[in-house]
Length: 503
Ligand code: SIN
Image 1 (tube, helix red, strand yellow):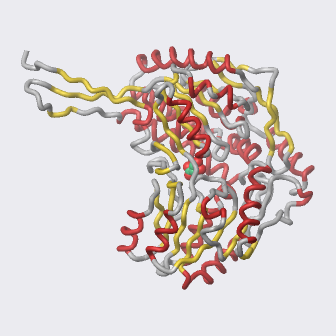
Image 2 (cartoon, helix red, strand yellow):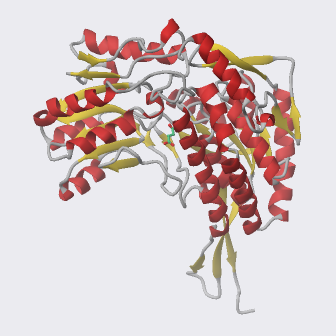
Image 3 (cartoon, rainbow, N blue to C red):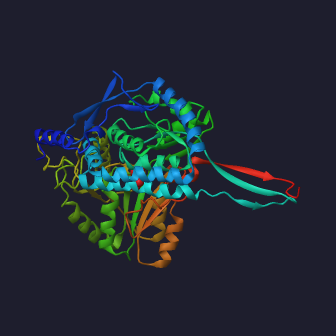
């Protein structure tokens, strides 16, 4: 079915088949109302490059209105709800996301390109953050601290930081919104979401369901725009007290510098360059499965994707043969085609970067074992596709060693000693995720401690879950999302010292 006409027909049918068609929205949500603009921007369907729809490109005045409304909304919200009540609102939102998961997943496939099964997986992953923080809402504990002064008690209160600016990426159009706003809403903050221009429709569907669940309509706002200059209002406006961003390191550093002018609290989930090490004592089949899970999720477009596969020289041939056998079974195509295992990339720019990494590595002596071209199973040669690719003989002087590819390219480096693997793994400015495969318990502890990353996967390629702290070190960012630590990112700690308690 992967011809352009076929896909366009199925995409149209998919939109027509939404059980709740009102979830496909091309407007923003500001100050309790869905608002549109005559200025719009196009949203593309990545498996054809055709236009899926146009979305209102809102202006600076919409940001300002949203910020003012969110400021008032936040005060009312936190003073009029208890933590369990906020938890209950989130629970209702969770129930609605689950009830509408098929519709959300279809919208997500059409604007992001990932296969339907992966999109459903993402919606469940997104919902898991809402469920997690619906429970965590009641667990925001302060302290009672033994004082060094007589007749004195020191307490800490955790209070909502206030209005939060939320800037989300296109690679997880649903999960990156819920991972940020569920903890914010749980503690009593208000949020203004700037969705990605590539995937604004999923964001709007989630906001619609949040309002339906009873989240007050001045506490959640959605301001789509394709103009980064205008969106900077969220970053510089003094009323916004917290900025949470997921995206590239370059943009994250720029936003952090802009936000410094108003001393905002920051969460930055930025780029990665994850090493995946396969030691000689690893279970090779498990390592291959882990590599597939980590490297090819979202067609390689996640920040935690393995970017460099480091394999012990003694097992490199066997590992490569098994990996290539698995990759040769992949089928690229339209995400709503049930046979598709790999979707397109989100843009032509993404494809160009993968091609550039392959060409640079091959020019410097790497061997192209499989992939590298446009997938032959995709007829019409349309869409932002590139075949899943494996390179061997990759070395530290190649671009792929230092830059995040963000695509389906598995470059295999070889090493001989544990220390060499660790040194290679850490030879990057990034520090988000790292993976390794070994059956030696001593090595597991040694290597896990030495990898310079925020998250380590041992004998698994899957590390993301609502209960697990997500975040990086070095140039991969600041702060943690999800988990019991996620609430504190949206709170400020207040110290209350009560003196003369003997009065
Ligand atoms: C990301 O790529 O930004 C998020 C990946 C994840 O949550 O697993």
